[in-house]
Amino acid sequence: VAILFLSDADATGAWAAALERELPDDEVLIGTDAARARAADIDFAVVWYPPPGLLARLPSLKAILSLGAGVDHVVLDPGLPAGVPLVRLVDPALTEQMAEWVAMNVLRHHRLMPFYAEQQARAYWKRHDIPRARERRVGIMGLGVLGQAAAAALRPFGFPLAAWVRHPRPWTDGEIFAGPEDLGPFLARSDIVVCLLPLTAETRGVLNARAFARMPRGAAAINGARGGHVVAADLIAALDSGQISAATLDVFTTEPLPASDPLWRHPRVTVTPHAAAVTLAETAARAIAANIRRCRTGTAMVGVVEPTRQY
Ligand code: NDP
Ligand code: OXD
Image 1 (cartoon, rainbow, N blue to C red):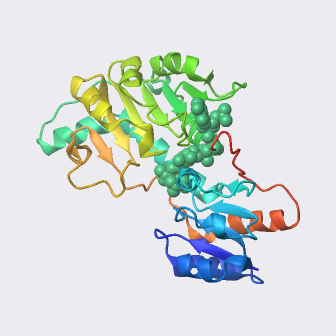
Image 2: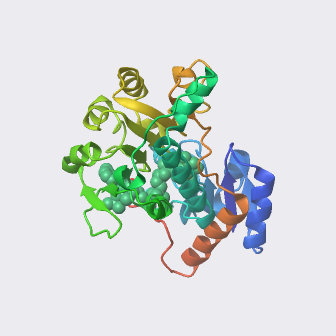
């Protein structure tokens, strides 16, 4: 049996070594040519943006393991083999990075750093008043593995927290809003909105003109999820009108973000290059290998995607 590794975005050598260390009895095959030549031998595929149709040509495939927490790059494939479990990455190191990135950016917006950066560019000295953290309401879209870690990182500062989810449930750290009917009230009570949703048919374009208009005037938006969640033209219009005061974006519909994109140059947009949480070969290979072992021994894998929900 062999494990297939498919990604144009990751350091192949480091990954092959990490997987071989974790699964010494398995052969690691790399790339599409190897996939085609040894299709019948492959029982697990570890992937980032797999070429459409390729996974359906692997007759012994037992599971598709995403190299990221998001699986939108796999779900894109219209020929995805039915009945083969798709598993997202749940890796404590990745989760930790996202919690850091969210905490850093919520604090940046709370402490008006985008405005001070703009002032510094003009050598302009002016201090602004800010509310106390207990008066700055933070709203997290998505309270999954990453949303929960982000909430835990923010809790010590005392921001009133709320989360928007799909399924209502009790939450001791803040207010829960669930489903499309709760989106408006959730946005209306959030001074800083953090998006940590999976990209699905239901969440695509969720941060659009209507959503920005529902936020309190001067709210800030932080997107650490997927570019497809934000309608960029609507965000720029909301920034230009002052409805949204500033935004931090880590993800974009086209990556790398083209040099000509106005988001690069907007004075109140901070861009990071899909760097909020980076998959690390060593820790991610450990999590992936643990799932492969679970699957082989008939135990439930961690992070199996529910096909109808797409996350
Ligand atoms: P999870 O699957 O653990 O959590 C998803 C959360 O989103 C759940 O709370 C779920 O609600 C909620 N949700 C899903 N659909 C809807 C909807 N239609 N309406 C309201 N809430 C919804 O995902 P993770 O936390 O692991 O990851 C989230 C995303 O972060 C990934 O899909 C990926 O796109 C992105 N990501 C970005 C990275 C970066 O570097 N920028 C790195 C890693 C991930 P419920 O709890 O009710 O099911
Ligand atoms: C992920 C990502 O989904 O890197 O993990 O964006």
